[in-house]
Length: 280
Image 1 (tube, helix red, strand yellow):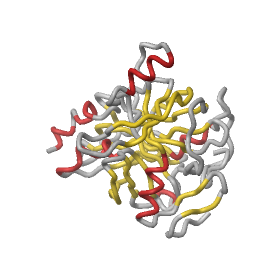
Image 2 (image 1 turned 135 degrees about the vertical axis):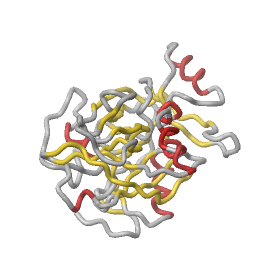
Image 3 (image 1 turned 180 degrees about the vertical axis):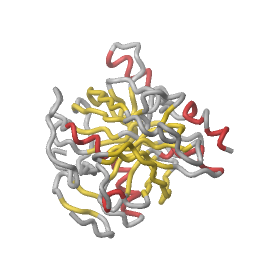
Image 4 (image 1 turned 90 degrees about the vertical axis):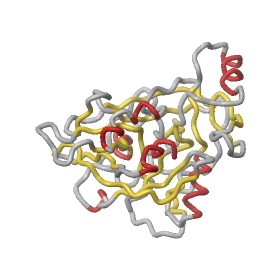
């Protein structure tokens, strides 16, 4: 079975308030705190039973990010498609003085029609010495013209990835071009997507899109692929030949979290939402 997972990454397109982050970090040109990436983890599949000199070889699928200190994460559902028929998804989590470690994931829930999924890492890295944090979710809907930045991690070598080298961080700044309707699945009802001015590359799927002012998550990277003419609409508006990026509005993820009683932090009111307790 593991051989089949070696090509799986080809199938995926690919806060100022942040409780649980370790210390403060300098901000970049977009005012984004460098420690925010501690909330983001690559979603992977281990190709080895035991680690070698440079750790586990793995297949990279995309990104997930923590939304509370109980070990819950969000990602896009299509990142998990390969695991429908078996296989254990994991995340890479970095310690303060150790190379990244693999932590198994449990799929708590998925909304395929809106392409969002809830995961939980076990053991909970917040209970140990891992260098992790979590991000708040935006209460307000995204609007056209809003400045955003997408944060993602990926292995230095996609085709021969190893767990000991630290993942590479990418930051893609841009704006929300428009909010369009499309079908994310052939037989699904139309759903909203955020079209972004910056392109999205392989491996960014599931990454958080942050509002540059509040640093709250407004969406999850979906990828370049958008149906129903939305790409053509965005190209005309921007007079660009480059396909826009697309993101799933975070409200779909919030709805799924509330359905399953999973706590999250609301950036607007800096409060904990949901039935499950989240401890600061």
